Length: 309
Length: 220
Image (cartoon, rainbow over all chains, first blue to last red; front, side, top):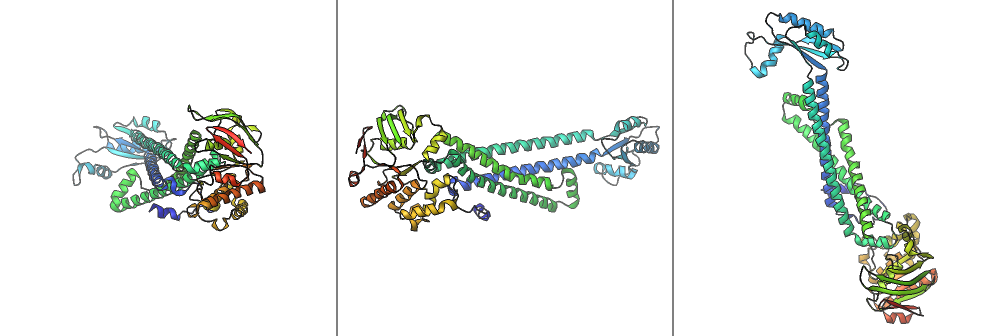
């Protein structure tokens, strides 16, 4: 399979490579680099998805605060609601303020209490949803201070939720970066072993090149060329496989869940859409893996040559 | 061109393989290097190829004391020395043409520049028809002629040959030495050819460097 794909990649024309293609444990190394590239790209894509969802969710909740008015004996609920709406609307940085109707408030309880219950006997806390025009400029402290005048009113800025969300997203991103570093280290080690193996296999070629006056730099360049080619191919195959993986997962998630459940999942965890940034990140895996392969093999070859010459 | 003065060589802490070698080789000369197996011919050739440093004494090549040279300078000097091995040491995955062109590729010449020279040389050594053949398809004599062509394509000042006739029949051996003689005569290349085939030496009137038990005597 891999050989078939490799045959589609254009080859360099001209003189045959001094280091034979088959002698560099090419197939095994190509498979390994493909797997490493795939894992890197999937990790990177996962991190991008989580970060995108976290940013979107944080932005949504950050643009909204909620005023809760609890029923208090001796207080007129409807009057308190109007005062709260009025206070909110007069606060700088607030775009709009709307009180949820009694029906809407009862609907919010439905998932916990079930349907068909008569809630008129219970005094349900009421909510005022406040949309902020600019979360930074909005005078939340002023609003909180003013709401002190309403008995039973409190302001929920969702700060605790956002902080938890940011912590979770930060942890996922950090874990992703650590996994990427570990994959990078494993790739480097694999290339070091493969290069040393290739040098031992091609010892005769190295000796002949030395005898005809080739410098260590020239010899390292010949080996680096082979490894760069393998790194490019592996990076390309792994990244394409990762893009296909995300595309398949996105399609499968869309098909398997009902539209309503899918929409809810989408709100919570985001869509499986990488966006331009994610695709560019995965595409960047190709040159990074190729460069890592080339640099590692060059350093290993130079060290091997200086040890043996 | 080459001067050895009281040169000794030992590997690690072992006994001295070569002892008190003192001789000089003039530009454009042809010498046979002979002696029984294990007498140190290959070690002496490796000293001449600058792939070994003497344990003692001085080696001067092309007017420079090789004991004090940097790696880069040693590399530059090695490019003035061609080498032919008994076992040919052609690269199996390259064609005859590519093997012969290798020293010029190493020097950074583009193929368009070296192709006419390589082609001409291959025709001169009788391999014009075998340019695109891989070494596995060549006879012993053809392989050795390809190895000689590779050794001389970059026009080295000195050509060393380590038992180049060891893997071919006596008739072909004689023809190969004629080829070396031709290179010496036409290109003025200094040649040191190591062999232990005494009948072959008798056919050519060249000075002999005789190595015995690590000591060298020269017979003109």
